[in-house]
Length: 273
Image 1: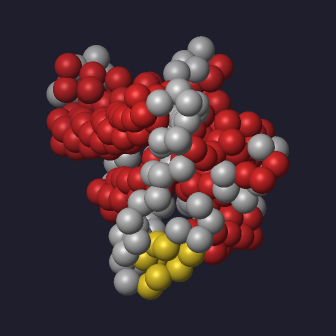
Image 2: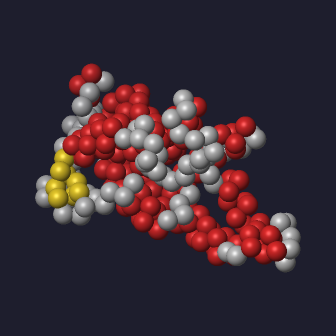
């Protein structure tokens, strides 16, 4: 995603309540005493710290794979001409890094048929273009920070991020299977994870203020709604090189995650938890 945005800091202090912390949380007047109340507060902030560590680790892994692509592409540059001229063997060590990345960090039907199912996840950590990487990581941090602010457990947060990435790639492959995109094309990038995290955050905190392009304030639900509409409109556009189906697959998983895992924390359907 090439969308540049960031969270606006609220001018109001963060209000802690039982609905925003891991349960059970007791009030200071609880017969169970202050110790139980404090443990809930401590758990809330521990969840945020651990979740931020997961978020930064995810960003770091994406940067590392991007650097791997740059190294491999530079190492193999000119290799095809050398192979055709007979000056280099197709099994040259210079080609091993690019072969490794092609086989393990791209999503395609060819990889699935060959049993490389892990590419449904690993391709979400893969970017070959700096702008693609920067846009996705900036957006993932913004959406992830909003979602973590409710104090959900690190396991749930990791499930939303990784599950959205896998669901996005499944959506991409399904779209290919319907004949809407060439079977030989491949997918990569964290856009599915970004959209899934954003969808869950939008359902959890729909009016959270965001900055579109870094300076236009919009509510989070408007931002995500606009993106879903955009992806839906261009889904079958043969001239588009964007994985709209992956975006929508990730967003669908994020919405399902809210309904199944996050609703108890509040949000648009919090009253029905």
